[in-house]
Image 1 (cartoon, rainbow, N blue to C red):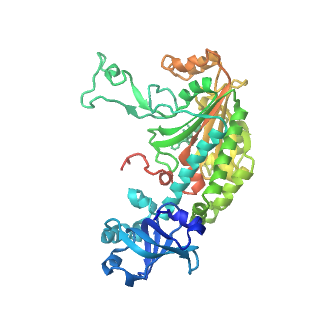
Image 2 (cartoon, helix red, strand yellow):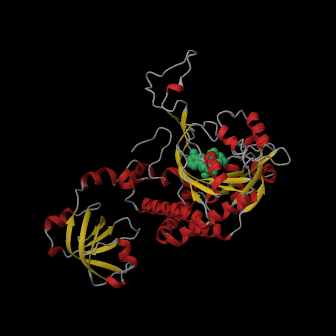
Image 3 (cartoon, rainbow, N blue to C red):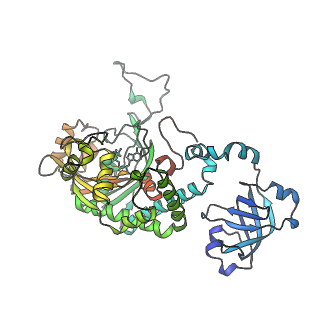
Amino acid sequence: MERKTIKDLLTDYKTILHHDITVMGWVRAFRSKRFIALNDGSTIDNIQVVVDFENFDENLIKNINTASSIKVSGELVESQGAGQSVEIIAKKIELLGDNFFEELQSTILQPKKHSLEKLREQAHLRFRTNLFGAVFRVRSAISFAIHQFFNQNQFFYLNTPLITGADAEGAGEMFGVTAFDLDQIPKDENGDIDYTQDFFGKKTNLTVSGQLEAETAAMGLGRVYTFGPTFRAENSNTTRHLAEFWMVEPEVAFNNLEDNIDLAENFLKYVIQYVLEHCKTDLQFLDKRFAEEQKQKPEKDRAKEGLIEKLENIVKKRFKRVSYTEAIEILMNSKENKKGKFQFPVESWGADLQSEHERYLVEKHFGCPVVLFDYPKEIKAFYMRLNDDGKTVAAMDVLFSGIGEIIGGSQREERIDVLRQKMKEMNVDEEELWWYIDTRKFGSVPHAGFGLGLERLVLFVTGMSNIRDVIPFPRTPKNAEF
Ligand code: ATP
Ligand code: MN
């Protein structure tokens, strides 16, 4: 007898109807000791198993509870009841493992404790819930779509190192990597740590971005992208920041800023369209949950669109492209700013934009995704291309509702003299980045790229509100359990 997934049974049952089949899964509910709702993770939907308890051992039936793992064989038939297409008439049931049902009931299934925060502490049961099942199936689909998009557009998948010798990337605070015995760290004659005695013979860190390495590869392979873990030791306990997250970074030779924005827009639309097509049942569930959550909020804080509607609009609408200078005008003249409603008032050109400003532009002012470009050079990284005005750089940020910045990128400075000058001004060590500067020596070309935080996109697509709930094992300040 061939074992099927529940997804197989529910979507593809025509040829196996009235055949005997076997499924394995976890019991979601056992109604009237007659109807088992069984789930195996392949889909959000359960299959109903009809149990004629007279045909089974009494002890077995008694031991089947919520969360029990079972193997069921029986005939697949058209369902009598509403709400499902097929069900299984059980002929044989086997309990697969222990189920500490009393412990489950007395601690874990307490409704009060069933909050998202509590579930974060239950590594295993979290995946068993409808909500997290949906979130992580969608996350997987998003990752797949990302690879597919780049593959279809002739990009090469590049793996950049997690341990980096460059601490000048300037994207945020870094975690050090060392093999030193921390109780006996070697010091030099000045009393400073002697990194020459460490594993790599120099100070090393966990990467904050694979961009600089990706640039070296783009200078030969043309179109590359990275997709891997990224680390930031920023102590910002927000709902949008993780200490370990997954970043996608395309880098393209011969692209300018406009090409880069086009790429970002096409890329986001492709991935969201993919999820709309391939994750229908999960999205329907998340859409309902999202609507329920909005109802709990005060009217003024509610999202204007439903979740699926929001995703469809992303695919349909053109992103609004606005220069930083225009955006600052809008923000300075906004009612919110004049009435002191922003936590960080916008006072003058040159100010760095906070999430609240980004969200104002997207949610209140334009009502669609916004791409800001040409930022003041002082608030952006050294490698961004200096514009002819001498004041701004060819940077671009893509802003989404509810999130703020989802993508940050730029055209890179390909002119070696300008790059060196910028590094000097911004105190970036030229010696350490000799290999990076070299890319501007031998056939330097215009090029551009960006970084997308995978979890910010998953957050947006699933309508969840805390970034910790869209990564399987969140790493945040004071938290590295499991
Ligand atoms: P922010 O200003 O929101 O902290 P950033 O400007 O530091 O972000 P970049 O260095 O431009 O971010 O990184 C590129 C992308 O990586 C961001 O657009 C965002 O999607 C994501 N990202 C950055 N930091 C984090 C983090 N701590 N946790 C999760 N995603 C992040
Ligand atoms: Mn950024």
